[in-house]
Amino acid sequence: MTRWRRQLTASLCLTTLAAIAARAQNETELAKASQNPVANLTTVPLQFNFNSGGGLESKTDLLLNVQPVMPLALNKEWLLISRTIVPYVNVPMPDGTRQTGIADIQEQLYLTPKQPGRFIWGVGPIFSVPSATSDVARTGQWALGPTAVGLVSYDRWVIGVLANNLWRIAGDNFGAPINQFTTQPFINFNIPQGWAITTSPLITADWSAPPGQRWTVPLGLGVSKITTIGRQAVNLSMQYYYNVEHPDNAAANQFRFQFNLLYPIERR
Image 1 (cartoon, rainbow, N blue to C red):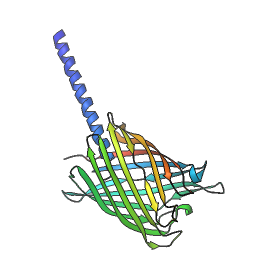
Image 2 (image 1 turned 180 degrees about the horizontal axis):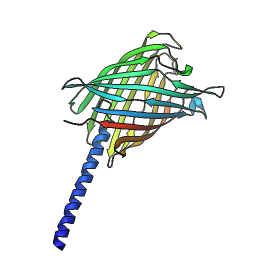
Image 3 (image 1 turned 90 degrees about the vertical axis):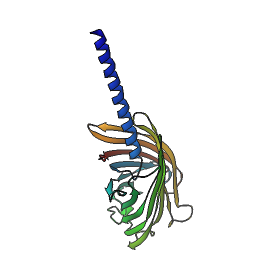
């Protein structure tokens, strides 16, 4: 009986260890998929950006981006990735009041291989719709441009860059014509139990602004964690960035918190 119990205990321990290893592997794979902007993965990120310092001094503004990402299988070889960005702003005004509302909504589309190699890529158009409900964010302009992303996923690393440029194509001008470049390099180092060390600074250039007031260049990093709430997979992240270059009236510090709902595509 004692021998039988020892064998049963050993078998249960091996089963438990196998289950833990499988779960850890799944967390790592899900983390790497969530770090890929053109993965075959439906996500609903809520990204909170708190900006302060610099031209804002002791004041703080909030930019909340709701960014649903949905893949559409065109055929056995190609995916179309839809990435919508709905920004909500809460901005302090000089008179002590605050302006709140929706800013212009962007739609990004990426054509990408369904079964990519080591180098993963996606290309397509980006649209900006004059949907702002807040005067401080209103442009009144329709804008269009190209967007692209490229990355490599190897071992624990996911490294890449996303870039686009928007130009005004129609609408009324509330301010300067839209001519804005955006690039977002990202580096993720995945560690056990769904954790990752990450950096993804959003670098922008407003070509319509005067020289010396065009670039915003953040530097910083943070951490992320894959976990579950009930049966719902989520990715939680927290990052800090310091703007080493920014317009005079822009913030110097950015705290970014992201809550990302993940819906993996079942393999068949």
